[in-house]
Image 1 (tube, rainbow over the protein chains, first blue to last red):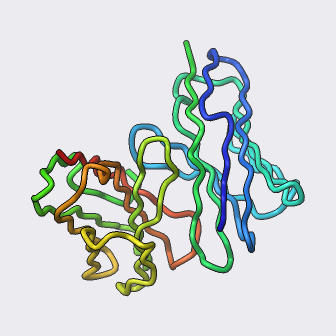
Image 2 (spheres, each protein chain N blue to C red; image 1 turned 120 degrees about the horizontal axis):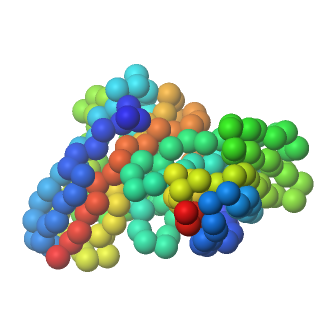
Image 3 (cartoon, helix red, strand yellow; image 1 turned 120 degrees about the vertical axis):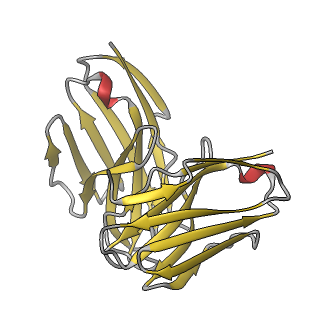
Length: 111
Length: 113
């Protein structure tokens, strides 16, 4: 059974800090890893990663995948209060074409 | 605006009631999904529809009954629910089954009294 573990479960930092969120996974036949941001409503797509070592970047957010060690990190630099959200990691298996989600990391940015 | 609209946003119902959740996508996608999100638990996939045909049913109790009349609309009919069914129910769509990313609606927050 596919499994995704995110850490930490929650994180509180001050505005301007840099944070790193972790996602480790076990999947039978890895296809892709996705990061979503969930505020009080719809999870919104951030990144999709399929290859090791290639950093994806969007503004202050970046993410990288390590397929050998089976993990991904999501970095947020110069955090802002608008970054407060739950960050979800999910993996897709080639075999069953289903997304398996982790429980998420709840990030709180203090002004 | 994600292109996926869910109604109602909130629903409170008794255990003997019958209600339906509605999802509509305006993205021209061919696959639609129902997920359940409970506190401190990962999103759980409930049902998958591809071209209006149900292709996945993740051991969901029969008190949840999905319906997909066309590729733009998805319903989740509820009857005789239990308190543990209280959760956020999210609808998502993708271009085809298995395509990423999936686009999510804002969800329906369901409370069972």
